[in-house]
Image (cartoon, rainbow, N blue to C red; front, side, top):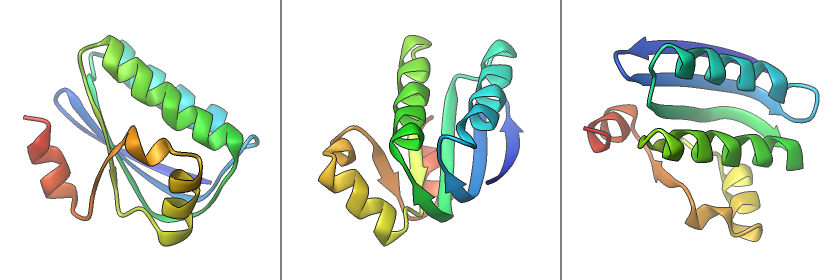
Length: 111
């Protein structure tokens, strides 16, 4: 998995590529935790290059959602690939995440 963070005041934008699974979630959790310690409240996760997610990856997304909610923040998903969208729908997690096609729209929804 490859993660690239961009920090914009209280919003962090993370591009996640590859596989989000048991072997890779710790890196994402560390990046999110580091930013939260510095005051980041909202997260935009760009997933258009995510090719696979397992239960640990889904749990990590829920963890991010819970952590942001605890800080009165929000999490947005952008560019969710069809295969990931199907997994979210089957697990009924699609109901928990606001999804956007465009990063600008996702960031705008947080203000």
